[in-house]
Length: 143
Image (cartoon, rainbow, N blue to C red; front, top):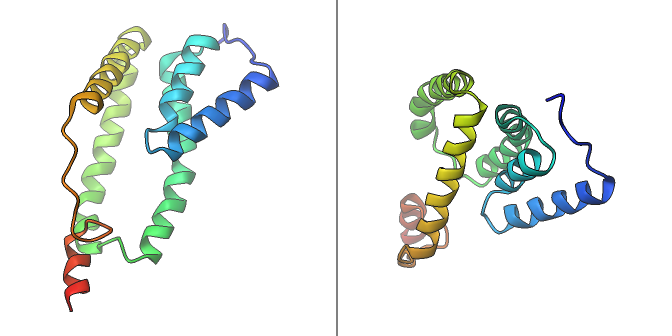
């Protein structure tokens, strides 16, 4: 990280606005952040991904609060997935650290390319009967 370039306030503001716009479109603003940090600021891939995850946590907690308040979280479904998910995240962290920044950068680029191609060529999903698309909500609406 010693070779990182300090971006000016104008570039930082532009990157933040672009990341927010992309995130608002549902595309993942973290992808923009990773690209800017690695390509233009000279950050190490592993460090940039770590920072991205660190910034994701407060956003995820706020979203979780809204989802719980809206009744969109089903504890019977979440609880069995919680521990395996945390274990997989820890395993992924240690695996990423072992791969090294060069290979991690290439894998990230391949993932972005594949996701982009899927978005371009995938057939649109059929519209759902309920606004949320949640079968439990459809059942509640029918009562």
